[in-house]
Image (cartoon, rainbow, N blue to C red; front, side, top):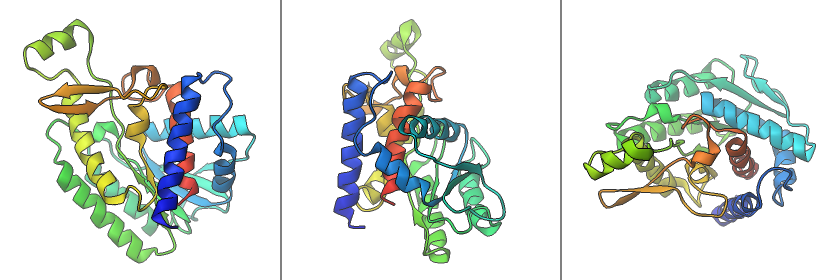
Length: 268
């Protein structure tokens, strides 16, 4: 698919998410195209490797499909391959070791769980990043993994996913740390996630399907970005209204993210 069409579809999807979110999510109509995207997904073989935020995304897709009355089949991945007209998913171990996650994702094609996939994607977790993560090295590892998989599986389209974010410590403790020149909790980790995500966008945005989870997580319903200033940089953070624990997505956050995920998968 031409890169301009991929970019246009992604922009329309994000604009629709913002517009609907501004009106509130409870009882709100879904954005134009949501049903069409879900119907497209329901006819494909999709393999999704993930951890716990991935379960949030799948719950969001189920919620969205129920609203739109689309029969979206989500199943656990098995060695027999991805069934016809289904989204097969598997947990890729383990949190805190992103290099192993990439190997685990690649192994799913070897052991048969991802066999026959029309579309495949792997999502790293916020727990895979620390304040000292080498974003460039991790991204290079991701590209090497994708290069091998593309060579071995030319019939599979790969969707790229930005790493999810955390909320940044606020309140009195966060304020005091800022005044002392110490980074509030979550900020340095988000800075490393954003460094990785920037590399991902630079390489693929507008050229190949990209699910920008971090952008969705850090954008308020009215379109404002949740960012924290740190040493001359603006570091995005997870909007508190989208989470109950600072990292995982609550029903509001997971539904917003599912809309964007459906749009990205539909053009893959």
